[in-house]
Amino acid sequence: MISFMSDWGYVNYYVGVAKSVIKMINPSSEVIDLTHGIEPFNVRMAAYMLERAVEDFPKGTVFLVVVDQGVGTERHPIAMETKNNYYFVGPDNGVFTRVIKRFGLKKAVVLENKKYYYKKSASFTFHGRDIFAPAAAYIDKGVDIEKFGREISRLVLFEDEEPVVENSKIKGALAYYDGFGNLETNIPSYFMGRIGKKFGDMVNVNIGGKILRVAYVKAFGDVNTGDFLIHEDSSGYLEISVNQGSAKEVIKKPQGSDVEIW
Image (cartoon, rainbow, N blue to C red):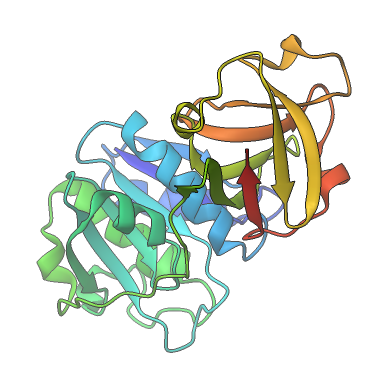
């Protein structure tokens, strides 16, 4: 199985062509679109969204990730395997930061063996078609990643401090905004128990200097329309939202902003 993520959208032909290349190489490949709605060039958003999705796929799934503002430059095209037996194909630009930190890196190689390219003279700007999609198809077909090129041990990772609890206060970060404008944090929901909070409590939230007082609840409908809330999202992380509204439009803070809860 191949899970396909990109920032390409559907206006252009890129997604369809990449899928066609996969099918030509491995007609039995099942390709599932994880999302093609990543904000253009937003590596951080892709990294966090990928981390949340991985364990909802069977072991051995190949994650094809093309969010690649450096296409055609000296950044490496890579394939890698994590310690929990999933495969990943894409650019070495930090997009795999979260899966490496959470699941551990078993092996990574540079995609340099042109035998496994779609076009031996790969386009400078369409590695998704010529390098990444073919690699994903061959891995899904059973080709060992060692066949693709030399092994590398150091990959690009973006700065990403893990959440902590200090003096009865949770300290984390704004991971990304989803398509509804919900603020996704990097804070596991069980941290609320560490500061003695339970469902129904009011909590203080500081997001990059903007302070809110919000209800800690199970579901959006537990507060009035237009009210803020904080709850556990479907992946086990704390999410800050507005019931039937957009937290992003109100908060207006960038990814990576500090988030404090007490």
